[in-house]
Amino acid sequence: MKTRKMWEMTRLDIEAAIKSGMGIILPVGSTEQHGYHLPVSTDTIIAVESAIVVAEESNMIVAPPVAYGCKSRPLSGGGEGFAGTISVKGTVFIHLLVDILEELIADGFKKIVLFNGHMENAAFIYEAAFEAYKNVQRPDTKILVFDMLVNGFSEQTMDAVFGDDFAGWGLEHASIYETSVMLHLKPELVNMDAAVDDCPEEVCWYDILPAPDKMLTKSGNLWKATKATKEKGELLWKEQVASLLSAVQKEFK
Ligand SMILES: [Zn+2]
Image (tube, rainbow, N blue to C red; front, side, top):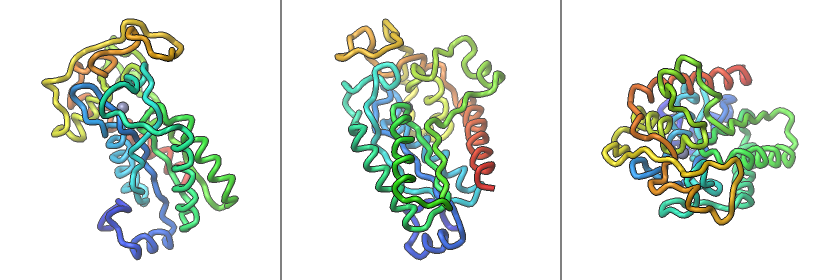
């Protein structure tokens, strides 16, 4: 196949893919600030690149990504107050996804996979899949929802990447995991000279509106971005795509 990316295919390519029973992966990300050193498309890039690898290995194609996501929350995305964070309402996000999923199903795709790269989308993405599935009533269609791209990592990898520096996936925003993976995938888009270590003064287990300054960081990343390396990124990436791939293959064998 010349390309796995649907946006590079002609109508005839897509018809042939559907006819041959190929599935499709819809990457969902965000447009969200990722500190001083990562592009606002980080979540979208990680979702798209994961989808491309899995699509190649399991004979699927990748739909054009949804590059706008739900509200950035202070303790998992830095909050909405930064330039470059462009979010949509949860209701808009659900409607958009439902429309896309219904069209994919109407076009004849029977294996549909959702890859989400932005934590705050998680519950909404399931909601959309549920709604679309309910609306079309096609028992021959199956939708897989990966509301996170990471199902934890092995103890070995966690030790090698984080050591004693794991503060939880929420605070990992624009920090060790995302920066390392981006150094592996798109080093030309990472400005490590600008990366800083940061942490909110207070990490509450609940949210507050309006977000008090103590819950926000100046940089927009929530943890230690300077601890990221390309090598760590490669390690994380290999394990991440392997677990995504094995789940997709298990469900669509
Ligand atoms: Zn992110």
